[in-house]
Length: 147
Ligand SMILES: [Zn+2]
Ligand SMILES: [Zn+2]
Image (cartoon, rainbow, N blue to C red; front, top):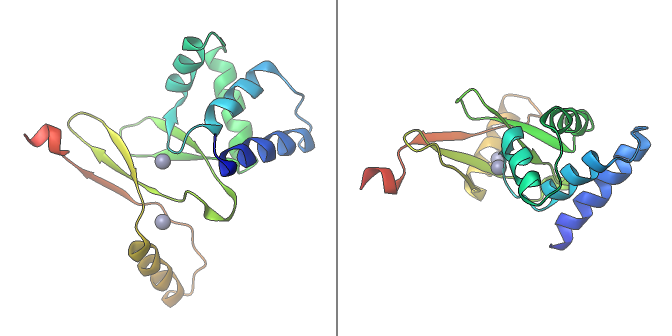
């Protein structure tokens, strides 16, 4: 677990406490799982991974905790156009900010980041007079699917 990762878990725990959410096993399990993630997972994947580590948390509880974390801006929803909502931790100051590339054949989702892309988006937003958030999703066929 890297420093930024454990910081996220600590600030998530603090924000949940300040938000008046009681400590609970489900909440802690979801936060600890997400703290190890640099990219996005569906609620079902989170549920399956928790079950695999013998920390069974009902799918309804997984959704409820995720929605609380989204409300507190600790987690963001990621929509890649396949009708499934994915969730990933949001790190303060944009650390680990990244985008997604999706293989439309096998469904693989990968993360990428690109400084030149960030600068281009920022300067475009500035020219438009906006202070803007952004999401970028590339769609295509991955190297494995094309071979
Ligand atoms: Zn991601
Ligand atoms: Zn970006």
